[in-house]
Image (cartoon, rainbow, N blue to C red):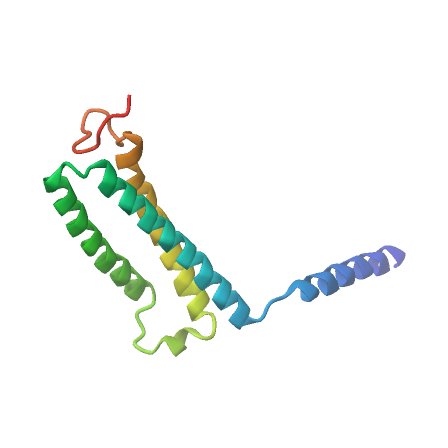
Length: 135
C-alpha cells in the first residue's frame, strides 16, 4: 500500500511538472511554422551555393532551376496527398503544426539532395553525372 502511494506521488509530481511546460496548440503551430521557415531559408542558401559553384555551366543551371520549380510542385503535391481534405479544418487544430512539420521534413530531404553538388559525393561513384568531384 505504501509503495502504491509513493508511486502515485511520483506520477503526480511528474504530471504537474509536465503540465507546467505544456504549450497551447497555437504556440505549437507557430513553433512548427518557424522551424519550417528556418529550413526553407537554409534550402535557399544551399541552392544559391550550388548556383554559384556551377555558375559556368549554363546547361546545369538551367536544369537545376527547372528541377527546383518541379520540386516545389512535388512538395506541394506531397502535402496535398498527406492531407487531401479540401477543408483543412477536417484535420483539427493540429493541422498547421502537422503540415509545417511535413514541409520541414520534405525540405530537409531536398537540402541533403542538393548538398551532393557541393560535397562532390554522389550516391554512386560510377555515375556522378554533373556532380563535380571534390577529391
